[in-house]
Image 1: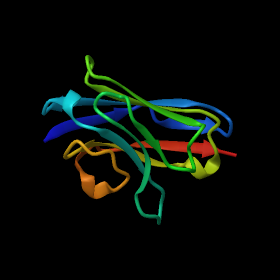
Image 2 (image 1 turned 90 degrees about the horizontal axis):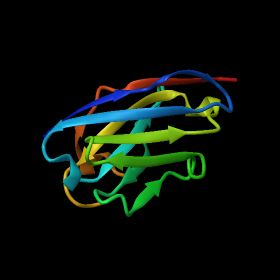
Image 3 (image 1 turned 90 degrees about the vertical axis):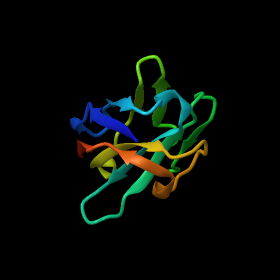
Length: 124
């Protein structure tokens, strides 16, 4: 498995931006897809975005498409989530996850390593 540590969360006003980072160590980072998920209080964990190991394929939830951008730097073992035009409904704990195989997916079951999460709060 791979160890993941997220950072970059915080409190921002609606319309603002944040950039989340996820640093990986352990298993060869560059060979696996990476994903971002989020979980709001009282709700199930939901898919946000994923990126293939070559970064040639990207996949976004409808709710964030056009506002969020996922990227990765395999040389730095880091995946990023740039979040623009944030809305109060984006408030959640954001988790990065490492895929278990070379498959781009929105299902949490396709990811076998998770970070501890970082809180994002968007005020109206």
